[in-house]
Image 1 (tube, helix red, strand yellow):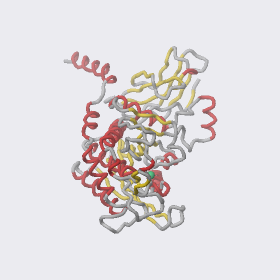
Image 2: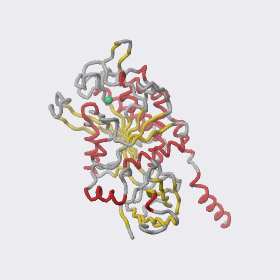
Image 3: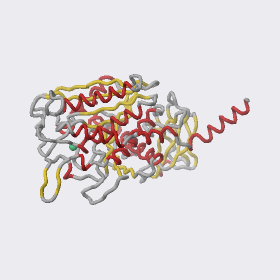
Length: 443
Ligand SMILES: [Zn+2]
């Protein structure tokens, strides 16, 4: 029996890292196109969800919309033994705070926390936006269905909560509807500030903003392409860190970029039919999204969205002009595609929520030596560690080596100058933390 057990252990140890986890496939299959369609339709039918719109009506305006979102999260909670903590997170903004705040307004986010069993204060976040707009950013009365921008991201977030609430995770997951996006990223700023005050340990945020359009102004129609935007390095870095990059590298290896690579890799593993595109920039040229306030606060955050946008269907008054149907209406949303991007989110939320924490201290050595050396601080919950490296011009971590439950390793024959390196922790089921780029050196 002892021998059998040992054999079994060896089998597990030798095979576990090459395997995928069947629960992830179950999660992909559980995401429902039909429910996403219902929810986008429901949201679009609130008439307008403009941040400054009516809050009293039960049928029209952002008040009705956020009450419905909250009740949806509460409904989900009743099916999982109250596994979601649902609440409003509010910030009062005074008239004139910006030229898009033309009256006093309460910016209200709807938050649902699925509390982790081992690390209740560590969070991976998925966000969509509640609010919508038309051509004039301050027009809060005209019909503004915002079906793609951003009922799609909001519906995807609610659907991810439905699917993942059937599971338990070591880390906490937050599903959130943010408000005030179109008026200047107010909801994200409010929640990022709240997170700092509460001392939340944030793994990162997946900001979903427009995940339902497959037919672009570029003429390309694709239901598999999507973009992952990430800034190169945090805006909160110190001068010392910036100077160190000149000598040790890291220009394209900030925490948000590692999160983007994580999503890219995990998608290729579990949904190889998709075409994730790593975009090496904060957001679209000169444009904004709700991951940015989290980046501003020093948290990792990425934007997940369609690859091919259609500008006649964003921020437009609904009208027919010069042969073009303008407006962000239901008919332009591809729900099968929104389902796929929701699944991309769900599998990455689950993988990170099942993963151990990333090592905090990662040091690299090997200057003028024939081998690169890595040292790191061990973390609770990891069964081992994986060293990643890549060519300096490569976007993705193309090489890796699982080195077991140790806190240092020497990569013989790998010259430090010619690659970039990082370390991830690995949990008992094979789920990995994001890769940590070295934050120290040793001789
Ligand atoms: Zn928008």
